[in-house]
Image (tube, rainbow, N blue to C red; front, side, top):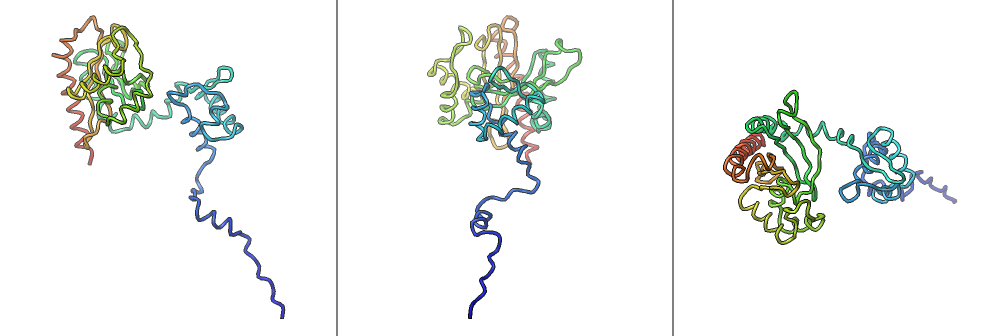
Length: 280
């Protein structure tokens, strides 16, 4: 007696295997949006300016997909084009403004920074370490530069090795991580006083770690002095740094150490205490 062939389920065994092995995405997942973020993240300190082919390669997208996303970002003002090259514009910082302004660090640091800035009538900044650079999160400008006092979100990036805030944060890194950061840094003299030779720079960073602060005089820019101290969370990790900057001609090194540094340390100690109390 002949048997009737059993009907095979439309879903193949290969497809079934794929379903069980691959992670399932939510029905709300927007593929095009995810690809757009991938393109934005493909830019970085070593890739500030890229061609379409370079963006496609770094983002893992096809040239066609990368091109559509770049042209969309261009129309929205988040990307600029110069010939065959694309760069991010400052407008990209808008994407992070809401996050940064709502961070506990930002909220808690503001009154401390304003008080310190009013004490000396000089700019106070908070920055975090991002690879070989520091990115400014908050800045209180000098009062006499504004019609009304307030906080400005800077978003500016500077080389960590020659920044006062950068050096105190580099001092908190494990030795192997510090080596990786310095290997990736473009170590060079920005002024005749810049400490940039590897051995001398590493000793200066270790010194910052021992003393708990960093003092920069005419190293990043002639006529600019800054002193910084680390911001430490409840777990004892250095998460950011705060500095106060002066004109070198107006405030001498000894005054920075004897008058400004103690006030900065008190301000940072208050902030560290606030962060610890709010950690739970």
